[in-house]
Image 1 (cartoon, rainbow, N blue to C red):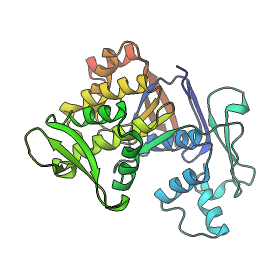
Image 2: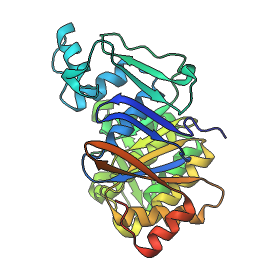
Image 3: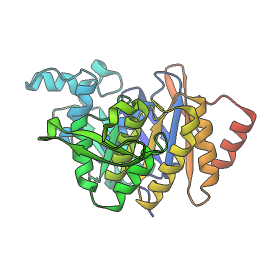
Length: 309
């Protein structure tokens, strides 16, 4: 199975004047202090996977409150925020996102003008989960795509990490906006609202649905551990490793949590057929430098409790 990105180069995008990560795996965990660029890497990969599509670009700009108007001048001002140096960026500035090689056919280019051009970069399936999770509408739409398939069983299995008495789920309602996820529990005669079972179950629902919808592409999740108790995080990673391999999906995730890093290492060690990578981002003199840890190095890090966040 070929990875979308076996390495990553980002130039002139937000905090990154130039960033190179020589090695990526099928499942990648990005760690580092606040404002070190973890979420920015997710944005860059998301743009790359979308082929630089306007809807993805607009979604990113809106999420930062950078696109607030509909005029050309508003859009140009928002676009400027993407570039390293922001308002000091010159008209010649170009954002480059792609693997570390000299093949421009595999590189996405974004120009400082209103146009953004992808050079021979084909959009592929991709899904993104923010730290706040998915909306009910997004979840319902993704659920409809997997209903009555094997992926429905995978999603239910994910929910059982926290809710072991969940037998099955469904979205019930008269319209897409009013549909809500309901669960049939082995301990209850009538279905209950999934939200009544806690934030963790609903976080798992968003992760599992998004991973399933990214089949053959890229899945990105920011602050993957949000809402998930540390005791369940290894099971979550084991599920992610298993589905990423079976669905031929490359995963990029971020975390602030040492428990999450340790759970990631244990899941990677147990999954001998899968390549994992942990990338730590450090900031020195306003420049970000990445350090990659292989599975063997990560085992040493966790055993010795070396700080990598």
